[in-house]
Length: 198
Image 1 (tube, one colour):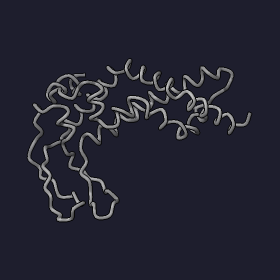
Image 2: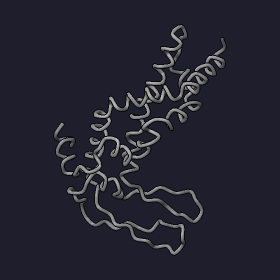
Image 3: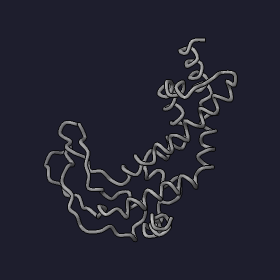
């Protein structure tokens, strides 16, 4: 069988069994909840104790209806009595271009950066689980990592949309909800997960 036909076979199997495969992925996420929580709170502690971290307040400057660029005013250190949920809403001081006409720039929050840091960790659980299921279903096939990399885009979103990634872990705030850490004070996170306490 050609490589192209083998790839089509794997994709068809994944799509035809999407609900069962997604259920297996969700089970992995549930079993790994404590590890996801620890990884997430380590990132929160690292961000909260970074020398550059501060509390900023946003000020609107433009009269254009869709331009929310404005500016940030540094107001001092963050309040470590605030919760994880509140901290995720804090601005980092950095911004990204919206690439939308008339919309200016978008100020980055810790919800953004912590998710960028952890999404690869979470996504790998999904891909590793799906790969394991496919390998077990086709035991006589010599499936390579390249096989899976080649077909990733053809099935990934279909499975992700049916898992906790699609429903809750689409942002750092969603991960806080999944791991039940939303209301934990930042000072407690730093105390338990800060670099000096590992």
